[in-house]
Amino acid sequence: MAESLRDRVREKLMRQIAEDGGGPSERAEDDPRLISLDDDLAVLDRAQDGDPVIEELAAKYWVP
Figure 1: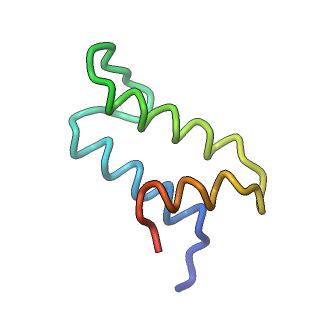
Figure 2 (figure 1 turned 60 degrees about the horizontal axis):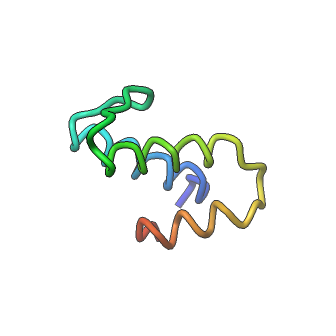
């Protein structure tokens, strides 16, 4: 696998957001799942390489 764990987590989050009908910055105020996905994507984007939050998000979203 050439992609980093961060890339795989990001891809999974983006796919789930798209499947749930939202965009990466479109917050559906009444949809807690989209809000959570969007928040986790923002956390991932702020994380530095090697940050344990990347591993935590990978475990949360079952990313190998």
